[in-house]
Image 1: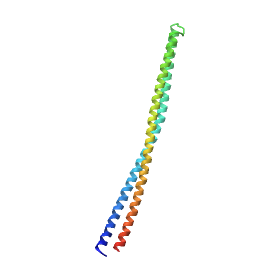
Image 2: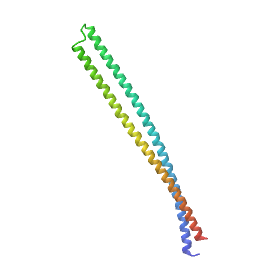
Image 3: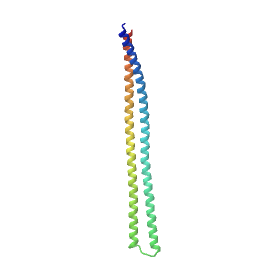
Image 4: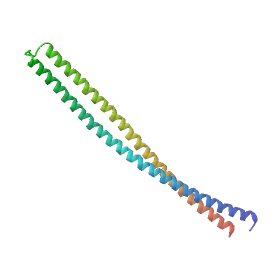
Length: 164
């Protein structure tokens, strides 16, 4: 056995050690990517819940606004009747204006609710996309670790051939 052969064998052993540590690092990375993917899936689920909460909140706000409209109209009708006036002219104009204002308020509430829901939908899709990406990165890291382990085995086999 020559010095060059011994040096090559020792170099192969060093390469095997490097591959083993590389595999260990790849497995740690895979675990971190899997953890990130799990958290992103949880965040996506929370965004989906937020969509439902916004829908319920918007419906409640619309119902409250409709109640306020009905109270205002009822108050106007009572004031007109209490004053002994007929429901005509200015009284009808006031009621129509109150209905328009109420319709505008409800429309604004619905629009804001839709905008907020869309924001949560975009957030949910983004979180789902990141979870998919991190899952793929975890799989790549595991494949890299497998390659490193195979490389370490081949390096050790080559060292054995050279040193024995």
